[in-house]
Image (cartoon, rainbow, N blue to C red):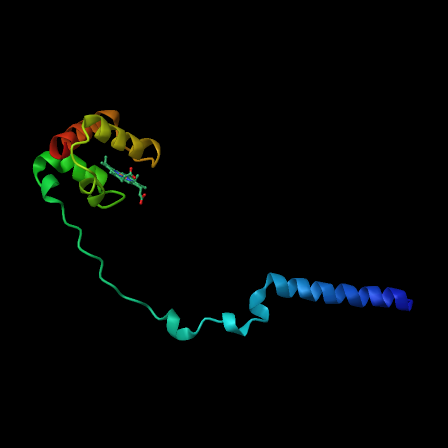
Length: 120
Ligand code: HEC
């Protein structure tokens, strides 16, 4: 092998090593090592989910069981009041179309009616 080829081989090895280090920063970055103390289990208490008073009776059971599957019922109670039936109908429709909530059309209508009745 001539010296020209050797230079090429050496350069290739250096470039390869740099590429490996660039791809795996952990190989040379001691500062990235996670200290063991931060891996300790953390316990916390979730706030208790309570049914809002507007939806706490039997007549709103369909809303509670359907609409609390993915998120808090506060998503409903924090909406502005007096928006009308269409607003609630569209909200329920958005849950179905955009977020994939498995709600039958008849249930969607019944839920919209209950929400319009309770929240205007
Ligand atoms: C399949 C899961 C799912 C179900 C079931 C569901 N939602 Fe949602 N809902 C979402 C997601 C996702 C968001 C957006 C969350 C965010 O932006 O933080 C949302 C947000 C909302 C909001 C906030 C305003 C908005 O449009 O983003 C309202 C109001 C709401 N949902 C009402 C309802 C009602 C009423 C029902 C029962 C008919 C319901 N949701 C059931 C997934 C769901």
